[in-house]
Image 1 (cartoon, rainbow, N blue to C red):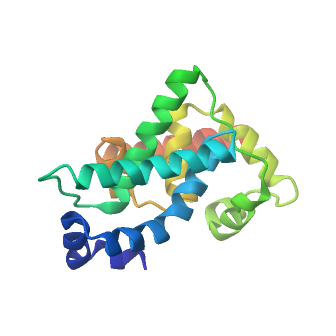
Image 2: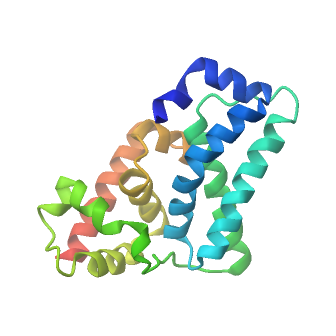
Length: 184
């Protein structure tokens, strides 16, 4: 379904401000963005509010005239990341923690990703990974969350973060290396 939203005819509809296309996009991406924001915030309610703000900002952008979206997925995550940055800047929080809510499906993600599931004992893996992930830098946390929890491609992460694909790849490699050290 994700590929459907990358098709040029759908993007043309979105860029024209087609309300039906926008609602389809909302139905598909709202749950993913809520999950992403919930990973990065301490409050599900705040994550829900921020998810709504993302779509409100997208709609404002589209109604702003000659604005055009080329990569919808990257555009949505860029807005979400900017809202998160604003939120943490205002609240002066330094660490991003993961919620203990099992609905976040962290166990499923770890089981699906072979590079993790082969190396991590499933018994205490979730809490240990959460604690270790929280000890990484904010940039490292973002890279891991985008890649392994949100299933963004390297090129989409590059577009969201404003870095080159090589920089993302290297940063992700280093983040995983540091995470493995913390897990050892």
